[in-house]
Image (cartoon, rainbow, N blue to C red; front, side, top):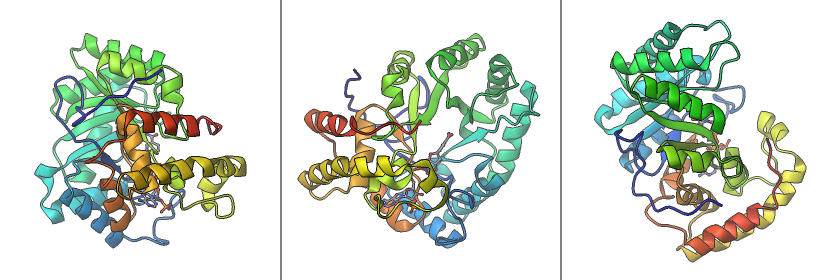
Length: 321
Ligand SMILES: NC(=O)c1ccc[n+]([C@@H]2O[C@H](COP(=O)([O-])OP(=O)(O)OC[C@H]3O[C@@H](n4cnc5c(N)ncnc54)[C@H](OP(=O)(O)O)[C@@H]3O)[C@@H](O)[C@H]2O)c1
């Protein structure tokens, strides 16, 4: 059973920077395949999403070399320069574990590529996007530690690592004197694996920040989709009709709890729930309206009873993974 924790700002590692209570995910910034970039939202929508987020005090922007095959990093770099916001943002990006990448220096080379696209000399956080089928974990961690020593990133993390693998990563980095700052995994009211497999507890024990991706269930927890109106494309295929039907009682509970906090929306309740669990949510936003709404997930807190009521309502939902 995971206890509730009140957090003012999450830190990236024991001595790392504070990056606030919430970040922004930029997978959709350039991605056509899953998110339909270019159909329904444009670069100008993304620019305003960025500007609103920064103006509302959001610091952490999460990208990856894989997102839009580099376009997400390029757009983010452009927006930061245009807004003169370099000192107000903390950028996290990721190493793609392509099967042809086998040695630690490919980690350094990949980060140099990301920095070039971002137009920066250093990022706040460099993460391994997922375990590699071929490169050993030790080799990857050495590559990350090299990036820190070269001053290319301030902190390093992993993503999609389960508890046992994360502990090994933590120990391998510790041998190089580098703390493991974060583990980015899927975590939301519809995907509670990190509570069940012990990852959230292990993160707490080792002082590793759990960064929660898809905290809105890829949009499902905003309440705008239903069994009658499922999301289009790859998302629609991922979430079966059964899950969408099961979602309604949870959404009802979220609406009622949001109303009791002066009209918070289901999206804001979903994100506040993640924070209450001690994890840092990075919701995606495609436009100014979404960014503004998501920024309203902080500055207030669910009570312990409300978190328990949401847990109970979410218990009826079958996990996707
Ligand atoms: N490390 C990994 O392997 C991994 C995997 C997945 C994601 N991530 C990271 O996590 C970030 C967030 O995850 P995600 O983008 O998958 O899912 P998410 O944050 O759960 O959902 C984002 C989507 O929900 C909709 N949305 C967002 N805010 C909304 C609002 N206020 N009202 C209505 N709709 C709203 C938008 O899509 P529509 O408008 O089209 O519905 C948006 O693209 C990613 O951008 C990425 O940085 C990492």
